[in-house]
Length: 424
Image (cartoon, rainbow, N blue to C red):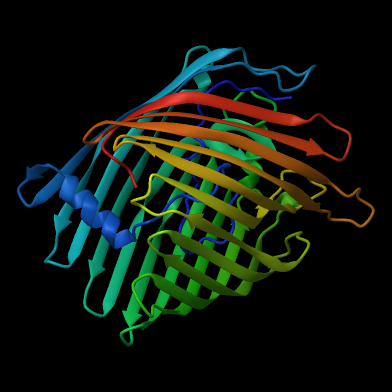
């Protein structure tokens, strides 16, 4: 059993690009609330950047999070790290430079330092660094960004232990409006994932380097917006994945998939969904069981921005690479509900509960069938202390019950985060 009493910032997602098809770990809690478009978020951030350096607007940022006491009871008979204290602190800024009335350059420099009291080898300078360009012309939209995101987080549900993981890459999105409602769009995304575990003395995390990989995603499609609240899209997507550590455990693959997306944002009802019929096969002599199946996600929310409370029902089906030499990947299937309640203008409570199953695919027919029943619950309480200053208290507990002999895995986290200036 794993019991980790700490804040793992479970709302922190792994890099979630619009074109990304496979994720290694999605924290429980359901989809992020996205009542605003990317353009609306950018306009709001520029407006709230109160400091000026000539034509450049600057928004300072500071955080103190993951203040935690870590008590690990993972498995008897293993040499495990001692009980320890940890915290993460960060100080940086975001800067915006208008390049005309419809285009903006964006720079983000958000360094963080991860501190551990006893396990000094786990101390790490992380951070998020980005350079981007966003342009919204009459018929043409261009969004480009490149940078590095390196943070301490859980990499895979098979080893729910926070480690520093780095993603280097970029994204280019271009959308051309052909008529009032119809547009053509293309997205190209590249990401190199590196798990920084070489110096850790924890026997559980050494194999995480097997998940290091390069991913490239290209998407081309059409999008129909009959009105402001509706968006429907159809696209074709090509993915290529190359694992860094190959040898006898190389699962490099590629595939082309049709994809459909739809969203609606009403005053009291909203929903969003994305579904792909994926077909992945091994490439360059790799070992991978071909995958042909449907992946995607869907969520429906009752209640809008102006309502005091809203409820969200969500489900997802994603493909996740496994660390086991017997199973190349598994399907992570979840369904859950979340309730959000506002208390006045400054306090918000969100609670959730979800269940599901991880179904593993074996390399060989003789390998025993493996599956895990998964359940999670948790919540967050957020206080807007003043403009740009936010305090959050968050907690989550998850349990994994396998059908094969072995220990049930559980983990829990609870803690607080203090942030100056809002992050996207």
